[in-house]
Length: 145
Image (cartoon, rainbow, N blue to C red; front, side):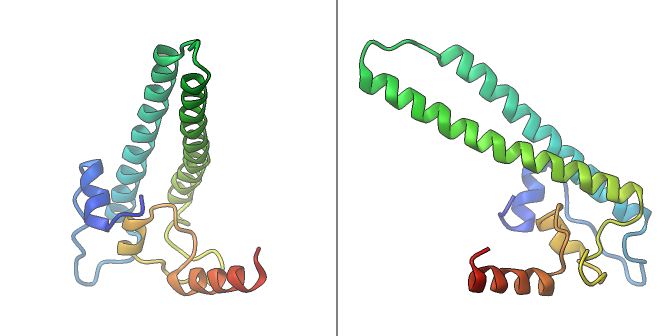
């Protein structure tokens, strides 16, 4: 979900949130908007898992040719790595949904400032504001963590 906000939301069939003047940050309509985004994203990921399982069951073959067998094993390995990343993402989505229910969603876990509606639309599992995220990335590059 690293595409632009409009592409991301469009792929989920969700329009960007229409910001209203003087609307409180993370009010109920905004929280519901993110519940909808996270729920749709979660459903999309689960469908991908199901497709992968069916694909691997349908395509599993014992090729007599070693190159064909190796190519299939590599394809399956890549798919499983992708699904493992998505499994971790599903956990983050569940955490974000819990934060919404606890009225803690949308605030930086390091400094406490608002992460922002558009940033959250682009990355609904974001837990850091852009400044803290930038600093974390700089530190990561410097220290190689």
